[in-house]
Length: 70
Image (cartoon, rainbow, N blue to C red; front, side, top):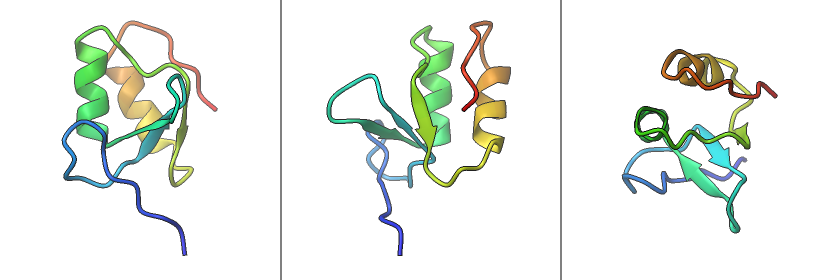
């Protein structure tokens, strides 16, 4: 069974992606990740927690920055 990660930002929701630019890595729910994008601090180096590309598409729509899809 996979470990459930809790969001670093709101500390309430299940994380859908994990930011890899910090040590230790920081898990984020989609809402908190979108807030970071809107504030100009997108998570550029990340992995999706459940390998669902829906989250990377949602992040890409929220910014003019080019996010890596991996």
